[in-house]
Every structure is written in C-alpha cells, then in structure tokens.
Length: 203
Image (tube, rainbow, N blue to C red; front, side, top):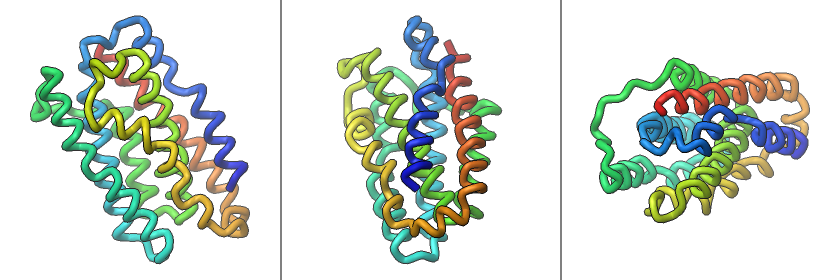
C-alpha cells in the first residue's frame, strides 16, 4: 500500500491548477466558490457515515466510525463561518456537473467498493487533496479571514485522516487488488481535479 500512497501524494501535487491560479490572481475573493465547498463538505460527511454503517470488517469499521466522528461537525462549523463571513448557508446551490460526477464516484466507492478501495479513495486521496487545498487557501486568505474551528481543524487533522486504515490493510489484499486500485485512483484524481477546478468558474 505504501507505493500507492506515495503515488497518490505525488499525483495530488499537480492537481487543481485552474482553481489555484484563479485563487492567486484574486479572482476568488468574492468567496462564491464556498457554496460548492459546502456541497462537497455535506456530501462527504454523509458518505463517511454510510461507509461506517456498511463496513463488514470490524477493524476497518471502527476506523471509519472514528473518521466520521472526527468530521461530523464540519458542515455545521462551515455554516457558522459562512454566516460570520456574510454568506448565506441556507442559500439553495446546485453543484456543478463536475462536482456531481465526483460525488457519484465517491458514492459508488462507499457503497460498492472494497475496503482497500475505500481507504485509498476516501482517506488517502480525499484527505491528502483536502490538506493541500486548505493549505493553499489558508496561505492566501490568512487566518484573519479564514478563522474558526472549521479551517483550523482541516489544517490540523487532514494528514492524519489520510493515513487512517492504511496500516490495517493486509499487503496480500492490496497486491491482489492493485490493478483495480490503480484504475480507481486514476479516475478519482481525474474527477477531483475537474470538480475543484469547476469552483473557479464562480469568480
């Protein structure tokens, strides 16, 4: 699994260039992209809950429960920050088509994926990319604007969450599933890149 983790970390470094470019140009200072982040946050936390309920491996199930418990307050924390930032967290907002495609993929992994697929996509990929994205946002906007528990927790725990469940996967299982895992990873990287880049359209 270590090789797949390293491959994921390297691949994540080159993603979301359209979103980051818009960010550094100041095109996202209107914060309208936050509504897409809100959609992603709420759907992802729901999927963590589903993953914990459906898992039939007692060890991995406890890890999924721990992951969900650590993040279940994030939607409310984000809504609280949005209110203080002058955004309306109750505003109806449809996800972009790219974001919908990503959510559909994550749902498929959650409901039908093996434990190895779920660890790779929901933990290693999702949390690594979240850490990189939030790090860039915090560096650009600073803690004065991105204040509060929601932003602080992402900086503190995303890297730890990316490791959850990895050590508990038997290597022979990973080796057996490696071709499928690499296909899933390639698809996940593609969809995450398109989804987050679509947030730049709200400049």
